[in-house]
Image (cartoon, rainbow, N blue to C red):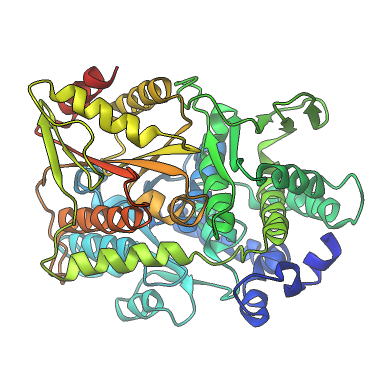
Length: 530
Protein backbone atom coordinates (compact mmCIF):
# COMPACT_ATOMS: atom_id res chain seq x y z
CA UNK A 1 0.00 0.00 0.00
CA UNK A 2 2.90 2.37 0.71
CA UNK A 3 4.15 2.12 -2.88
CA UNK A 4 0.65 2.66 -4.28
CA UNK A 5 0.19 5.75 -2.10
CA UNK A 6 3.46 7.32 -3.28
CA UNK A 7 2.49 6.39 -6.86
CA UNK A 8 -0.66 8.52 -6.33
CA UNK A 9 -2.93 5.58 -7.16
CA UNK A 10 -6.54 6.81 -6.71
CA UNK A 11 -7.76 3.20 -6.83
CA UNK A 12 -6.52 2.90 -3.22
CA UNK A 13 -9.87 4.37 -2.23
CA UNK A 14 -11.93 2.09 -4.46
CA UNK A 15 -15.51 2.29 -3.30
CA UNK A 16 -15.24 5.94 -2.26
CA UNK A 17 -18.03 8.02 -3.77
CA UNK A 18 -15.63 10.45 -5.46
CA UNK A 19 -14.17 9.70 -8.88
CA UNK A 20 -10.52 8.95 -9.52
CA UNK A 21 -9.76 12.38 -10.98
CA UNK A 22 -11.19 14.14 -7.91
CA UNK A 23 -9.02 11.95 -5.68
CA UNK A 24 -5.90 12.48 -7.78
CA UNK A 25 -6.39 16.25 -7.50
CA UNK A 26 -6.07 16.06 -3.69
CA UNK A 27 -2.72 14.26 -3.45
CA UNK A 28 -0.44 17.30 -3.63
CA UNK A 29 0.48 16.89 0.05
CA UNK A 30 2.69 13.97 -0.98
CA UNK A 31 4.82 16.49 -2.91
CA UNK A 32 4.85 19.13 -0.16
CA UNK A 33 8.33 18.31 1.19
CA UNK A 34 9.86 18.59 -2.31
CA UNK A 35 7.73 21.59 -3.30
CA UNK A 36 8.58 23.62 -0.19
CA UNK A 37 12.27 22.67 -0.09
CA UNK A 38 13.12 25.04 -2.94
CA UNK A 39 11.02 27.81 -1.37
CA UNK A 40 12.15 27.72 2.25
CA UNK A 41 15.18 29.96 1.68
CA UNK A 42 13.05 32.67 0.09
CA UNK A 43 10.39 32.35 2.80
CA UNK A 44 12.97 32.74 5.57
CA UNK A 45 14.57 35.75 3.85
CA UNK A 46 11.16 37.41 3.52
CA UNK A 47 10.25 36.66 7.15
CA UNK A 48 13.58 37.97 8.45
CA UNK A 49 13.22 41.18 6.43
CA UNK A 50 9.67 41.66 7.71
CA UNK A 51 10.78 41.19 11.32
CA UNK A 52 13.91 43.33 10.86
CA UNK A 53 11.76 46.28 9.77
CA UNK A 54 10.78 46.61 13.45
CA UNK A 55 7.19 47.36 12.46
CA UNK A 56 5.52 44.34 14.03
CA UNK A 57 5.71 42.65 17.44
CA UNK A 58 2.52 40.60 17.05
CA UNK A 59 1.18 38.28 14.33
CA UNK A 60 -2.53 37.42 14.35
CA UNK A 61 -3.62 34.49 12.19
CA UNK A 62 -7.21 34.55 10.95
CA UNK A 63 -8.20 31.07 9.80
CA UNK A 64 -10.26 27.96 10.47
CA UNK A 65 -9.53 24.22 10.54
CA UNK A 66 -6.43 23.17 8.65
CA UNK A 67 -5.40 26.80 8.14
CA UNK A 68 -5.06 27.41 11.88
CA UNK A 69 -4.33 24.09 13.61
CA UNK A 70 -0.79 23.36 12.38
CA UNK A 71 0.42 26.94 13.13
CA UNK A 72 -0.79 26.33 16.70
CA UNK A 73 1.37 23.22 16.90
CA UNK A 74 4.46 25.14 15.78
CA UNK A 75 3.70 27.96 18.23
CA UNK A 76 3.32 25.62 21.22
CA UNK A 77 6.40 23.57 20.35
CA UNK A 78 8.82 26.37 19.49
CA UNK A 79 7.33 29.59 20.80
CA UNK A 80 8.79 32.78 19.32
CA UNK A 81 12.53 33.30 19.02
CA UNK A 82 13.86 36.41 20.82
CA UNK A 83 13.22 39.45 18.66
CA UNK A 84 10.45 37.74 16.67
CA UNK A 85 6.71 38.50 16.99
CA UNK A 86 4.38 36.48 19.19
CA UNK A 87 1.60 34.58 17.41
CA UNK A 88 -2.11 34.66 18.22
CA UNK A 89 -4.67 32.53 16.41
CA UNK A 90 -8.25 33.67 15.95
CA UNK A 91 -10.43 30.83 14.66
CA UNK A 92 -13.87 31.82 15.86
CA UNK A 93 -16.93 33.98 15.33
CA UNK A 94 -17.44 34.46 19.10
CA UNK A 95 -18.02 38.20 19.64
CA UNK A 96 -16.39 38.25 23.08
CA UNK A 97 -13.36 36.31 21.91
CA UNK A 98 -12.87 38.70 18.97
CA UNK A 99 -13.25 41.75 21.21
CA UNK A 100 -10.96 40.12 23.77
CA UNK A 101 -7.97 39.94 21.39
CA UNK A 102 -5.18 41.93 23.04
CA UNK A 103 -3.25 43.79 20.38
CA UNK A 104 -1.85 47.16 19.38
CA UNK A 105 -3.18 47.62 15.82
CA UNK A 106 -0.19 49.67 14.66
CA UNK A 107 2.19 46.85 15.65
CA UNK A 108 0.14 43.89 14.40
CA UNK A 109 0.53 41.88 11.19
CA UNK A 110 -2.53 39.85 10.12
CA UNK A 111 -2.26 36.52 8.29
CA UNK A 112 -5.52 35.75 6.47
CA UNK A 113 -5.44 32.04 5.75
CA UNK A 114 -8.01 30.08 3.69
CA UNK A 115 -7.46 27.49 0.97
CA UNK A 116 -10.81 28.07 -0.73
CA UNK A 117 -10.75 31.79 -0.03
CA UNK A 118 -14.45 31.60 0.84
CA UNK A 119 -14.42 30.55 4.53
CA UNK A 120 -17.04 32.81 6.06
CA UNK A 121 -15.41 33.27 9.47
CA UNK A 122 -12.03 34.07 7.93
CA UNK A 123 -13.39 36.55 5.40
CA UNK A 124 -15.54 38.28 8.03
CA UNK A 125 -12.58 38.55 10.41
CA UNK A 126 -10.49 39.92 7.55
CA UNK A 127 -13.12 42.54 6.78
CA UNK A 128 -13.45 43.48 10.46
CA UNK A 129 -9.73 43.98 11.10
CA UNK A 130 -9.07 45.58 7.71
CA UNK A 131 -11.68 48.20 8.65
CA UNK A 132 -10.01 48.62 12.05
CA UNK A 133 -6.68 49.26 10.35
CA UNK A 134 -8.29 51.79 7.99
CA UNK A 135 -9.01 54.01 11.00
CA UNK A 136 -5.29 54.32 11.79
CA UNK A 137 -3.58 53.95 8.41
CA UNK A 138 -3.94 55.07 4.81
CA UNK A 139 -2.39 51.75 3.70
CA UNK A 140 -4.11 49.06 5.81
CA UNK A 141 -3.25 46.33 3.31
CA UNK A 142 0.43 46.68 4.25
CA UNK A 143 -0.45 44.97 7.53
CA UNK A 144 -2.15 41.97 5.93
CA UNK A 145 -0.81 38.77 4.33
CA UNK A 146 -2.97 36.25 2.44
CA UNK A 147 -2.32 32.50 2.23
CA UNK A 148 -4.68 30.87 -0.26
CA UNK A 149 -5.09 29.15 -3.62
CA UNK A 150 -4.34 31.13 -6.75
CA UNK A 151 -7.42 32.90 -8.11
CA UNK A 152 -9.55 32.41 -5.00
CA UNK A 153 -11.90 35.09 -3.65
CA UNK A 154 -9.36 35.85 -0.93
CA UNK A 155 -6.61 36.15 -3.55
CA UNK A 156 -8.71 38.71 -5.44
CA UNK A 157 -9.42 40.63 -2.22
CA UNK A 158 -5.72 40.70 -1.39
CA UNK A 159 -4.85 42.14 -4.80
CA UNK A 160 -7.68 44.67 -4.65
CA UNK A 161 -6.67 45.92 -1.19
CA UNK A 162 -2.90 45.84 -1.84
CA UNK A 163 -1.99 43.27 0.80
CA UNK A 164 1.66 43.19 1.80
CA UNK A 165 2.08 39.74 0.25
CA UNK A 166 0.09 36.79 -1.12
CA UNK A 167 1.39 33.24 -0.68
CA UNK A 168 -0.18 30.94 -3.27
CA UNK A 169 -0.47 27.33 -2.15
CA UNK A 170 -0.79 24.39 -4.59
CA UNK A 171 -4.43 23.83 -5.54
CA UNK A 172 -4.13 20.03 -5.14
CA UNK A 173 -3.20 20.31 -1.47
CA UNK A 174 -6.20 20.11 0.90
CA UNK A 175 -6.53 22.15 4.07
CA UNK A 176 -6.09 19.46 6.72
CA UNK A 177 -3.14 18.01 4.79
CA UNK A 178 -1.42 21.39 4.47
CA UNK A 179 0.81 21.56 7.58
CA UNK A 180 4.00 21.29 5.51
CA UNK A 181 3.00 24.02 3.08
CA UNK A 182 2.69 27.79 3.32
CA UNK A 183 -0.32 27.39 5.65
CA UNK A 184 1.87 25.98 8.40
CA UNK A 185 5.25 27.42 7.49
CA UNK A 186 4.57 31.13 6.95
CA UNK A 187 3.43 31.60 10.59
CA UNK A 188 6.32 29.40 11.76
CA UNK A 189 8.85 31.48 9.82
CA UNK A 190 7.51 34.74 11.26
CA UNK A 191 7.98 33.30 14.77
CA UNK A 192 11.60 32.40 14.00
CA UNK A 193 11.36 28.61 13.66
CA UNK A 194 14.49 27.20 11.99
CA UNK A 195 12.77 25.78 8.92
CA UNK A 196 16.00 24.55 7.34
CA UNK A 197 16.70 22.37 10.36
CA UNK A 198 13.06 21.26 10.40
CA UNK A 199 13.37 20.21 6.77
CA UNK A 200 16.52 18.12 7.36
CA UNK A 201 14.59 16.09 9.96
CA UNK A 202 11.45 15.93 7.83
CA UNK A 203 13.36 14.74 4.76
CA UNK A 204 15.06 11.96 6.76
CA UNK A 205 11.75 10.74 8.16
CA UNK A 206 10.02 10.94 4.79
CA UNK A 207 12.67 8.65 3.31
CA UNK A 208 11.94 6.15 6.06
CA UNK A 209 8.19 6.43 5.53
CA UNK A 210 8.52 5.81 1.79
CA UNK A 211 10.13 2.38 2.29
CA UNK A 212 7.83 -0.55 1.58
CA UNK A 213 9.23 -2.36 4.64
CA UNK A 214 7.61 -4.24 7.50
CA UNK A 215 9.07 -1.85 10.10
CA UNK A 216 7.72 1.29 8.41
CA UNK A 217 6.10 3.34 11.25
CA UNK A 218 3.33 4.46 8.88
CA UNK A 219 2.24 0.87 8.28
CA UNK A 220 2.29 0.13 12.01
CA UNK A 221 0.16 3.20 12.74
CA UNK A 222 -2.32 2.56 9.92
CA UNK A 223 -2.82 -1.05 11.05
CA UNK A 224 -3.42 0.10 14.61
CA UNK A 225 -5.92 2.70 13.42
CA UNK A 226 -7.72 0.05 11.37
CA UNK A 227 -8.40 -1.86 14.60
CA UNK A 228 -10.19 1.23 15.94
CA UNK A 229 -12.71 1.07 13.09
CA UNK A 230 -14.22 -2.31 13.96
CA UNK A 231 -17.99 -2.35 14.64
CA UNK A 232 -18.78 -0.82 18.03
CA UNK A 233 -15.39 0.91 18.15
CA UNK A 234 -14.36 4.22 16.58
CA UNK A 235 -12.72 6.06 19.49
CA UNK A 236 -9.00 6.67 20.00
CA UNK A 237 -7.66 8.22 23.19
CA UNK A 238 -4.56 10.41 22.82
CA UNK A 239 -2.14 10.94 25.73
CA UNK A 240 0.18 13.81 24.77
CA UNK A 241 2.98 15.74 26.39
CA UNK A 242 1.79 19.17 27.54
CA UNK A 243 3.56 21.03 24.72
CA UNK A 244 2.04 18.59 22.21
CA UNK A 245 -1.61 19.26 23.13
CA UNK A 246 -2.07 21.35 20.00
CA UNK A 247 -0.92 18.33 18.00
CA UNK A 248 -3.93 16.54 19.49
CA UNK A 249 -6.24 19.15 17.98
CA UNK A 250 -4.53 18.74 14.61
CA UNK A 251 -4.79 14.92 14.73
CA UNK A 252 -8.41 15.26 15.84
CA UNK A 253 -9.31 17.19 12.70
CA UNK A 254 -7.22 15.05 10.37
CA UNK A 255 -8.67 11.71 11.50
CA UNK A 256 -12.24 12.71 12.32
CA UNK A 257 -12.86 14.79 9.19
CA UNK A 258 -11.07 12.35 6.87
CA UNK A 259 -12.67 9.11 8.12
CA UNK A 260 -16.01 10.12 9.69
CA UNK A 261 -18.26 9.16 6.77
CA UNK A 262 -20.81 6.54 5.79
CA UNK A 263 -21.53 5.67 9.43
CA UNK A 264 -17.93 4.83 10.36
CA UNK A 265 -14.60 6.46 11.19
CA UNK A 266 -12.21 7.30 14.03
CA UNK A 267 -12.74 10.06 16.60
CA UNK A 268 -9.67 11.04 18.66
CA UNK A 269 -10.35 11.88 22.32
CA UNK A 270 -7.54 14.07 23.65
CA UNK A 271 -6.72 13.73 27.36
CA UNK A 272 -5.92 17.04 29.02
CA UNK A 273 -3.18 16.83 31.69
CA UNK A 274 -4.88 19.53 33.80
CA UNK A 275 -8.18 17.66 33.78
CA UNK A 276 -7.41 13.94 34.13
CA UNK A 277 -10.13 11.34 33.79
CA UNK A 278 -12.76 13.78 32.52
CA UNK A 279 -13.59 11.81 29.37
CA UNK A 280 -15.45 8.80 30.75
CA UNK A 281 -14.79 5.06 30.66
CA UNK A 282 -13.67 4.46 27.03
CA UNK A 283 -12.04 4.22 24.59
CA UNK A 284 -10.14 0.93 24.64
CA UNK A 285 -7.56 2.07 22.04
CA UNK A 286 -4.98 4.70 22.97
CA UNK A 287 -1.76 6.28 21.74
CA UNK A 288 0.79 8.19 23.80
CA UNK A 289 3.28 10.58 22.16
CA UNK A 290 6.13 11.96 24.24
CA UNK A 291 8.83 14.50 23.49
CA UNK A 292 12.47 13.69 24.16
CA UNK A 293 14.72 10.69 23.80
CA UNK A 294 13.12 7.42 24.82
CA UNK A 295 12.81 3.80 23.91
CA UNK A 296 11.52 2.48 20.58
CA UNK A 297 7.84 2.50 19.65
CA UNK A 298 6.06 -0.29 21.45
CA UNK A 299 2.72 -1.95 21.94
CA UNK A 300 1.33 -2.76 25.34
CA UNK A 301 -0.34 -6.18 25.26
CA UNK A 302 -3.77 -6.84 26.66
CA UNK A 303 -7.37 -6.00 25.82
CA UNK A 304 -6.77 -2.26 26.15
CA UNK A 305 -4.69 -1.80 23.00
CA UNK A 306 -2.04 0.89 23.44
CA UNK A 307 0.88 2.27 21.43
CA UNK A 308 3.43 4.87 22.40
CA UNK A 309 6.48 6.53 20.90
CA UNK A 310 8.83 9.45 21.41
CA UNK A 311 9.59 12.41 19.21
CA UNK A 312 13.30 12.80 19.96
CA UNK A 313 13.28 16.52 19.17
CA UNK A 314 10.71 19.19 18.38
CA UNK A 315 12.15 19.28 14.85
CA UNK A 316 10.67 15.82 14.26
CA UNK A 317 7.22 17.44 14.11
CA UNK A 318 7.33 17.62 10.30
CA UNK A 319 7.75 13.86 10.15
CA UNK A 320 4.98 13.42 12.70
CA UNK A 321 2.63 15.43 10.49
CA UNK A 322 3.56 13.33 7.47
CA UNK A 323 3.22 10.01 9.34
CA UNK A 324 -0.32 10.80 10.48
CA UNK A 325 -1.32 12.10 7.04
CA UNK A 326 -0.12 8.91 5.36
CA UNK A 327 -1.66 6.60 7.96
CA UNK A 328 -4.98 8.46 7.73
CA UNK A 329 -5.01 8.10 3.95
CA UNK A 330 -4.28 4.37 4.26
CA UNK A 331 -6.92 3.64 6.90
CA UNK A 332 -9.42 5.55 4.73
CA UNK A 333 -8.60 3.01 2.03
CA UNK A 334 -9.63 0.24 4.43
CA UNK A 335 -12.91 2.08 5.06
CA UNK A 336 -13.45 2.82 1.34
CA UNK A 337 -14.03 6.51 2.05
CA UNK A 338 -12.56 9.59 0.40
CA UNK A 339 -10.16 11.07 2.98
CA UNK A 340 -10.08 14.44 1.25
CA UNK A 341 -13.73 15.58 1.29
CA UNK A 342 -16.12 16.67 4.07
CA UNK A 343 -19.69 16.38 2.74
CA UNK A 344 -21.46 16.85 6.07
CA UNK A 345 -19.44 19.94 6.94
CA UNK A 346 -20.85 21.49 3.79
CA UNK A 347 -24.43 20.59 4.81
CA UNK A 348 -24.03 22.43 8.14
CA UNK A 349 -22.62 25.47 6.29
CA UNK A 350 -25.68 25.55 4.02
CA UNK A 351 -28.06 25.40 6.99
CA UNK A 352 -26.17 28.17 8.79
CA UNK A 353 -26.36 30.34 5.69
CA UNK A 354 -30.14 29.90 5.59
CA UNK A 355 -30.44 31.06 9.21
CA UNK A 356 -28.08 33.97 8.51
CA UNK A 357 -29.81 35.16 5.34
CA UNK A 358 -33.43 34.95 6.47
CA UNK A 359 -35.74 35.46 9.43
CA UNK A 360 -35.78 31.74 10.26
CA UNK A 361 -35.37 30.62 13.88
CA UNK A 362 -33.96 27.31 15.00
CA UNK A 363 -36.76 24.70 15.10
CA UNK A 364 -36.21 23.57 18.69
CA UNK A 365 -38.80 23.43 21.48
CA UNK A 366 -38.45 25.19 24.83
CA UNK A 367 -38.71 22.64 27.65
CA UNK A 368 -38.04 24.29 30.99
CA UNK A 369 -36.06 26.98 32.82
CA UNK A 370 -33.67 26.74 35.75
CA UNK A 371 -31.61 29.29 37.62
CA UNK A 372 -28.87 30.16 35.18
CA UNK A 373 -30.09 28.36 32.06
CA UNK A 374 -32.95 27.30 29.80
CA UNK A 375 -33.43 23.83 28.30
CA UNK A 376 -34.49 23.15 24.71
CA UNK A 377 -35.02 19.85 22.92
CA UNK A 378 -37.21 18.28 20.26
CA UNK A 379 -37.05 14.89 22.00
CA UNK A 380 -40.30 13.46 23.41
CA UNK A 381 -40.82 14.45 27.05
CA UNK A 382 -40.78 11.49 29.43
CA UNK A 383 -40.68 13.52 32.65
CA UNK A 384 -43.02 16.52 33.03
CA UNK A 385 -41.46 19.72 34.27
CA UNK A 386 -42.94 20.34 37.70
CA UNK A 387 -41.74 21.99 40.90
CA UNK A 388 -38.62 19.85 40.79
CA UNK A 389 -37.48 20.87 37.33
CA UNK A 390 -33.95 19.64 38.14
CA UNK A 391 -35.30 16.07 37.97
CA UNK A 392 -36.64 16.81 34.49
CA UNK A 393 -33.21 18.06 33.38
CA UNK A 394 -31.49 14.97 34.74
CA UNK A 395 -34.05 12.67 33.12
CA UNK A 396 -33.54 14.39 29.76
CA UNK A 397 -29.77 14.02 30.05
CA UNK A 398 -30.12 10.37 31.07
CA UNK A 399 -32.12 9.84 27.86
CA UNK A 400 -29.42 11.66 25.94
CA UNK A 401 -26.76 9.38 27.41
CA UNK A 402 -28.51 6.12 26.52
CA UNK A 403 -26.45 3.46 24.74
CA UNK A 404 -24.08 5.93 23.11
CA UNK A 405 -20.61 5.48 21.69
CA UNK A 406 -19.83 8.97 23.00
CA UNK A 407 -21.40 12.32 23.92
CA UNK A 408 -20.22 15.60 22.40
CA UNK A 409 -20.26 18.80 24.47
CA UNK A 410 -20.57 21.55 21.84
CA UNK A 411 -19.88 24.97 23.35
CA UNK A 412 -20.69 28.16 21.46
CA UNK A 413 -18.80 30.15 24.06
CA UNK A 414 -15.51 32.10 24.04
CA UNK A 415 -12.38 30.01 24.62
CA UNK A 416 -11.36 31.87 27.77
CA UNK A 417 -9.42 30.05 30.53
CA UNK A 418 -12.13 30.59 33.14
CA UNK A 419 -14.74 29.19 30.74
CA UNK A 420 -12.56 26.22 29.80
CA UNK A 421 -12.01 25.21 33.43
CA UNK A 422 -15.76 25.08 34.02
CA UNK A 423 -16.46 23.22 30.78
CA UNK A 424 -13.97 20.52 31.77
CA UNK A 425 -15.65 20.25 35.18
CA UNK A 426 -19.01 19.89 33.42
CA UNK A 427 -17.54 17.32 31.06
CA UNK A 428 -16.13 15.34 33.98
CA UNK A 429 -19.45 15.47 35.80
CA UNK A 430 -21.40 14.21 32.76
CA UNK A 431 -18.85 11.48 32.02
CA UNK A 432 -19.26 10.11 35.54
CA UNK A 433 -23.02 10.47 35.68
CA UNK A 434 -23.71 8.92 32.29
CA UNK A 435 -20.71 6.55 32.10
CA UNK A 436 -19.99 7.71 28.59
CA UNK A 437 -16.92 9.02 26.80
CA UNK A 438 -17.20 12.80 26.50
CA UNK A 439 -15.64 15.12 23.94
CA UNK A 440 -15.49 18.92 24.00
CA UNK A 441 -15.60 21.21 20.99
CA UNK A 442 -15.90 24.99 20.69
CA UNK A 443 -18.21 26.28 17.99
CA UNK A 444 -17.68 27.15 15.23
CA UNK A 445 -14.13 25.74 15.49
CA UNK A 446 -15.28 22.11 15.75
CA UNK A 447 -17.50 22.51 12.66
CA UNK A 448 -14.26 22.49 10.64
CA UNK A 449 -12.92 19.47 12.53
CA UNK A 450 -14.98 16.88 14.41
CA UNK A 451 -18.22 18.26 12.96
CA UNK A 452 -17.89 15.88 10.00
CA UNK A 453 -17.60 12.85 12.32
CA UNK A 454 -20.55 13.99 14.47
CA UNK A 455 -22.79 13.92 11.41
CA UNK A 456 -21.20 11.32 9.13
CA UNK A 457 -19.66 8.91 11.64
CA UNK A 458 -21.32 6.17 13.72
CA UNK A 459 -24.92 7.23 14.38
CA UNK A 460 -25.04 6.24 18.07
CA UNK A 461 -23.79 9.57 19.45
CA UNK A 462 -25.51 12.26 21.50
CA UNK A 463 -24.85 15.99 21.76
CA UNK A 464 -25.26 18.70 24.38
CA UNK A 465 -25.09 22.15 22.79
CA UNK A 466 -24.32 25.20 24.95
CA UNK A 467 -25.21 28.69 23.75
CA UNK A 468 -25.83 31.94 25.58
CA UNK A 469 -28.31 34.77 25.34
CA UNK A 470 -27.51 37.40 22.74
CA UNK A 471 -24.44 39.46 23.52
CA UNK A 472 -23.32 42.81 22.13
CA UNK A 473 -22.88 42.42 18.38
CA UNK A 474 -19.67 43.83 16.86
CA UNK A 475 -20.61 45.05 13.39
CA UNK A 476 -18.83 43.65 10.34
CA UNK A 477 -18.45 46.50 7.83
CA UNK A 478 -20.11 45.68 4.52
CA UNK A 479 -22.14 42.78 5.98
CA UNK A 480 -25.84 42.81 6.89
CA UNK A 481 -25.05 40.95 10.12
CA UNK A 482 -22.56 41.08 12.99
CA UNK A 483 -20.53 38.41 14.75
CA UNK A 484 -23.21 37.66 17.36
CA UNK A 485 -25.75 36.85 14.67
CA UNK A 486 -23.20 34.81 12.71
CA UNK A 487 -22.24 32.85 15.84
CA UNK A 488 -25.88 32.01 16.60
CA UNK A 489 -26.66 31.10 12.97
CA UNK A 490 -23.78 28.60 13.04
CA UNK A 491 -25.11 27.07 16.26
CA UNK A 492 -28.64 26.92 14.81
CA UNK A 493 -27.46 25.36 11.56
CA UNK A 494 -25.49 22.68 13.36
CA UNK A 495 -28.36 21.94 15.74
CA UNK A 496 -30.74 21.51 12.82
CA UNK A 497 -28.43 19.07 11.01
CA UNK A 498 -27.66 17.03 14.15
CA UNK A 499 -31.32 16.86 15.15
CA UNK A 500 -32.36 15.74 11.67
CA UNK A 501 -30.33 12.56 12.25
CA UNK A 502 -32.42 11.49 15.25
CA UNK A 503 -34.57 8.39 15.05
CA UNK A 504 -38.27 8.66 16.03
CA UNK A 505 -38.52 9.00 19.80
CA UNK A 506 -34.75 9.45 20.22
CA UNK A 507 -33.08 12.14 22.32
CA UNK A 508 -30.06 12.94 20.11
CA UNK A 509 -29.33 16.59 20.89
CA UNK A 510 -30.22 18.91 23.79
CA UNK A 511 -29.62 22.66 23.84
CA UNK A 512 -28.87 24.62 27.01
CA UNK A 513 -28.98 28.42 26.84
CA UNK A 514 -26.96 30.15 29.57
CA UNK A 515 -28.65 33.20 31.12
CA UNK A 516 -26.88 36.34 32.31
CA UNK A 517 -23.33 36.00 33.59
CA UNK A 518 -21.86 32.98 31.79
CA UNK A 519 -19.58 31.88 34.62
CA UNK A 520 -22.38 31.99 37.20
CA UNK A 521 -24.66 30.15 34.75
CA UNK A 522 -22.05 27.44 34.21
CA UNK A 523 -21.65 27.05 37.98
CA UNK A 524 -25.44 26.68 38.33
CA UNK A 525 -25.46 24.04 35.62
CA UNK A 526 -22.58 22.11 37.21
CA UNK A 527 -24.35 22.28 40.59
CA UNK A 528 -27.52 20.81 39.07
CA UNK A 529 -25.75 17.95 37.33
CA UNK A 530 -23.17 16.92 39.93
